[in-house]
Image 1 (cartoon, one colour):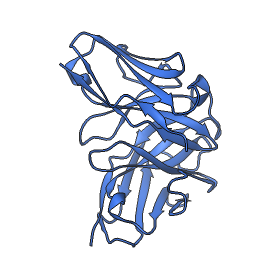
Image 2 (cartoon, chains in turn green, yellow):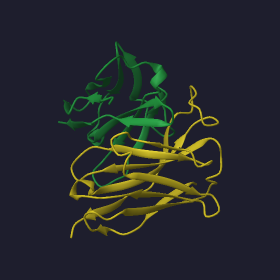
Image 3 (cartoon, helix red, strand yellow):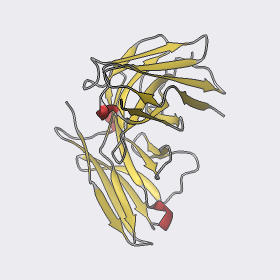
Length: 110
Length: 127
């Protein structure tokens, strides 16, 4: 079964830049997987940040950006703020009506 | 504004069947642009995609749960449902319903992601 990999945790200083990645246990992530990114704070439902690799969802600040870096999808936060401290999940479309979540990255801003 | 609301028992006994319903308001479940799905999150853990249903009734499941999962749609009630059989404590989780946006049932450059989520409902498996 396909496993989508993410860093379990990451730390960034306020105002700093951080790049979270989303890979595959076997193979490379490309735009054909339509990678999307979701932000979740404790006790809340996830919020859509990025879809189709690099399109920001409505209302998402432009400090969030998506891309393909090498063989992985990436979420970059430029100028991190305290309220960016959250869990971040990538999702890949595997075809045939199926999606797969990555394990999530817990981002700390300190 | 589209809203999704999960409903169902918050406590299920081991070996029984977990049943949840998601009611969609503010939009039609019958559009060919959406899959309607279920996602769960065990306490303190990550999100796990369970499966989805198309308005036509076609279903798609996570292979790891496929033998125990049934997702169905009721277009007359604008609802879709999840049934998970033979539950154990490992099935204790917050269950979310969600809308997956596509273009006519196919992924496109702009339409292939989860765009709306329910608030989630905690289901505990315990005797």
